[in-house]
Length: 352
Image (cartoon, rainbow, N blue to C red; front, side, top):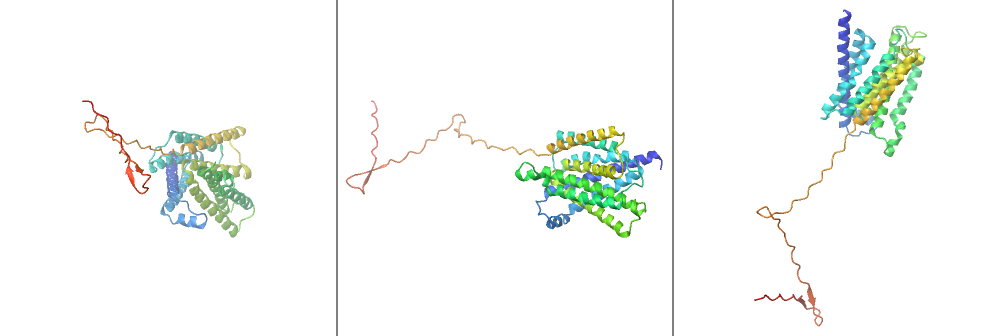
């Protein structure tokens, strides 16, 4: 296949991947909005697994992942990764259409800010060189640290103000979204390690079968955990959690690459400055998406007073006199059981 055709196919597959991820996010958001507050624990998980819409979302996520992997086969990372950020742009109108509303200007501005920050982060992040992967010991350390961080984020301890009314579902949803993106990013790094282990190119001694199986179990756990955490995140809305997931995923992979694989940002010190600026831009976008996704309270309708009755001619209001009160009886002192009506005043004489 010539380079032009390969690039075109990579672009097409990237768009298909973005559409699949966007449809999956909208399906998960609608499922979270339609589901009542389920109890925590196994009951909530069983209720979720019993919903057909959940499995549709799982299938769409899998289709998006396969299309993304295929796009990376035909095109460079610098082309495929920025196109993957179009998931947010596609999910906004799709979610608004399903909710029968319009995308607000604040949401569009937030999406543009987030996309700008995400593209900036991808632009200065260099791809991992072939053959570079975590050792088994490093993989276990990363998995343990990530599990602890996810437990803190998912437990809501960082959002303790929510119980006092100053937080809310949006803040807790962003915590779940951050945990989801981190879990997915670590799953990607461990997948690279598993690929190197299967190719017998893992740093250190040759892995045994149980070490390879352990890596597969960790990958499955983080991947499924990231999917479940994203489902919990969408209880706080669609746009802001989706943006946080898309940001924290490459951020987690970048931290692993810089800390353990000896990678660095492109352009040296300038790359670090660009990455910091892009992070601030993306954070600004998430704030706008959080504000834009809040629903306005429904206006209170005050009933109009009933119109006054009018005369048959429709010109002069009719005045209905109040009913005359009956005269109070007068008790005769000499005969306590005998009463007499109150004497009415005599009518005024009429002049002749």
